[in-house]
Length: 340
Ligand code: PEP
Ligand code: MN
Image (cartoon, rainbow, N blue to C red):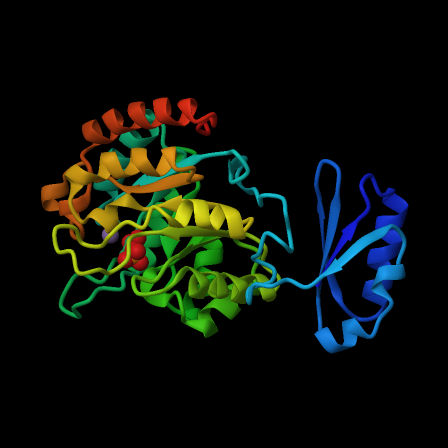
């Protein structure tokens, strides 16, 4: 349920109204707009319907959230969520570019890539350490050692780091070594994992499963939010269609849809969508033009010898060229890129 407060409602009324709801045993989320405040309530609907919500101080309307996802919906929280990682913001008009290799391979390779992406304007560094590979015979990632390398290189170049978590047993390691926990496409509906990370306070990058609808994706976000972690960034990475020219089909329409129905930031991963490096730049530009809050791009200083996803990784010079255009598009559509 949501309570829409009267235009210009007094701070004291907002406080009294939300306190009363909490005294009835329900949790509230207060979302303050320029003129209007919305109080979102999570709780048993029957119990709430029995309460005199309409008579609380300065309540204008009592509405039900129509979407099955509640905390993730824009009805529940009209203002954009802005997630801040080490001073770098994503969402609400702040854009950020995450770049780095698919998987951390050697310290030397990561140093070279990190230096190059930082110079080109990336604000965060990515690198997989526990890789969810289709084949058990493919490189599975360096594990803890990969996280340590990523952490060290991130510190050296002052870039927050992003890496994919695949199992509950590694949560403590990730809390220690990474700044944003990525949940990959294959684990988007691993509900136990989602609940577990929902109990932490770390920013979560939640990728869309390649065969999942937008609603299923938002319901997965709801699993994290409902456990108390409000720091969710959505990431579209392409969905499976009949088209074999690309690895997946980038669903650009998710950007305006998510912006309409949810307050959560959305970024695009053009690399896993394209599967080939030479389509990455144009898909990045289209995503920024469509209003994405950022991008996550695979870059490797020597893609031919990368241990995973070399074919879709940009070389540093190509990334630099793309970044120049991304900045132009970003300025053109009225939003600035985060600077280091
Ligand atoms: C990745 O980002 O390294 C990855 C495996 O992506 P996805 O889960 O989108 O396939
Ligand atoms: Mn990859």
